[in-house]
Length: 230
Image (cartoon, rainbow, N blue to C red):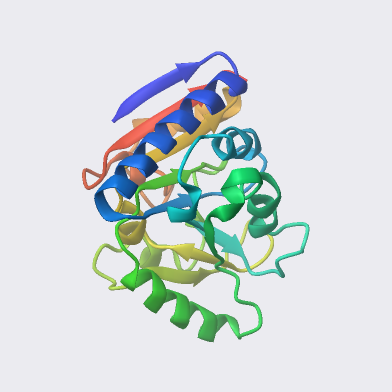
């Protein structure tokens, strides 16, 4: 695990965008394409803008989400909407987009189809994750009945449907083994409150209490923590 501390979110976004672009470029050189997994919410919006400005061969990049709320793509809570509006712009609009909320189907049918698609997808070049105040990451929430399935390294699943209990909307979330099948994971943390949550996560080992610990304590994929004071 490597730690990268910045005084401002703007400085963090610039540095993290460069690091992600480096992973994508290396994967394109190696494999001819690169898969990028991002997370939603407000925290990554500045990162999306900085990343969209990177001089990449965007036509060889495939973008998808670590998790998504089960809402229409134009819903105010849609992570896909944020990605389209803030990342897939300018030159980055040439990237291929793989949504998770296939709401024209039932949730059960969509998850079955996505599970197959993601199982056949190649190793990810970069996975960018956030962390909630309760220690969740992706849509692996502490009180979710589906948490054990999402954290299991032996489930044979690449994604699950999950009820977060403490947040609105059912979700589609990649599972821990699918997230870890990558060249590097970037954990993106902004603000003093999140730093306290991160410190608590590092201090314990109960994955069900704080699922982000599964990312912090694994040894399958390189992990870089990018965090800023504000």
